[in-house]
Image 1: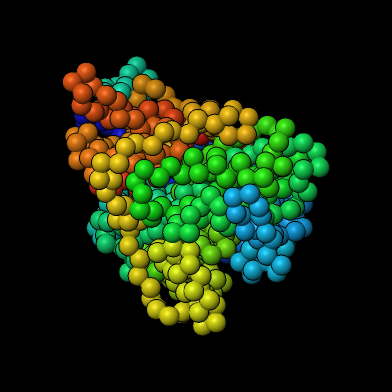
Image 2: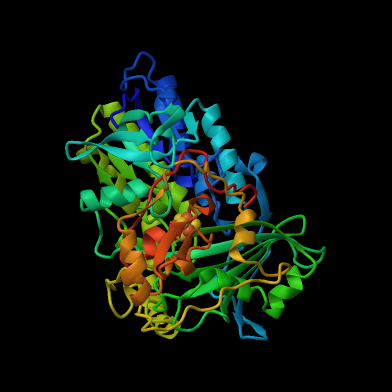
Length: 556
Ligand code: SF4
């Protein structure tokens, strides 16, 4: 189908209204304001306008797709909004930070909290509320934020990029236009900033097309979270705990969090590396099992599940950071691997990466040159900032755990005393999906059902994610060859998509002739991107659905 697309031109187009994208937009608009006020008739470069900054947000509103633990180190926010404490929706300051070792029936608190788990001075926040607030500041600054619009395709231009095409709206499930059909816009910009978050669908294509990969492929984890209202007195606001051990086996990398929020609300979650050997492993079931530990049961008993969500996160760090600049383009935030996998902190690094991108773009716009030569100032700014300092110290951290917890602890001990170098530097990593071992006829495990009070099946949890998609639209989970699923994958790996998806999207349905058919319940998708990452044959491509679809992580 050939469609006529409306073209719009901006100076800067930011794809994604998360902490990175919004910080980029706000910092740039602040720089522009100061510049316009000081340059009078344009003596120090052309007059610029915040209205020429466009931000795309695929969710129903800003914050709808934002999910994190979340503990925020406020240092980037303090630079961006110096008086943030007056108006930011900070839930509570961390008052106690515990590291706990779980065995099946007991828990032990480390007498001294290891440095990576120390969080005093940080805030427990709802990332959804924080980004909504930040989005309000961005809009008040005059930036154009387009909600319910996703970046569907990149516009390539020469050696770089020149913009994005947003998704077509109003197509039916066969791709035919409905009465409300509206073609996507062709948004052109001098600089396009990819701030799509973890496993960005455009970033993935750009990195592959332009060979922007670093020495390691990106490593990922999956984080599964629930928000609960609990009985008064069960957890103090500001109490944070990180758990190691049961039920996560020692040959895997993962751990849990328990964060006390105000008003008897608690954020709990489990993060597991997506590089396990057993293709029938079910992260959602392990998360539910973790909640049955006496320590958690005591907190949650008599409480009520409020919200559920899941999201992947990029663990790879410095050596998995793609080249983040090219003609007309920059990559920031989780899309650019700005996350400290040891402390599991990415919000302040994402924000800082957005701010440094803003400074780079500001200089480029003033100079009238947005080529890669000018935009190459971005990685130099990162080198000179605390981003490099923080990520360099943990540059080999996550790779150390690719063969289990014990080996990981030995490596990290050496890394601690050598400023991150450790025994091998750089330590190489493999893509997580390469770790699967074949099932060799092992039968499918029984699915986790839950008791409906403390533990839940996936569909109950999906209901609590507020996920909604227009049902009659093309499937946004593109499987290159479903035949592989029904034959090769069923035999070799037992269709891991049925287990790793935390939203029960993939099912292998039995056909009348005894064969298997892949059924995709795309409307359940919570946009965690795990299938795009963890599919053993790498034939699942997650693309943006019609804008506005997806979870509603209000308060998460
Ligand atoms: Fe996550 Fe993929 Fe399942 Fe959607 S379909 S919830 S992106 S694993």
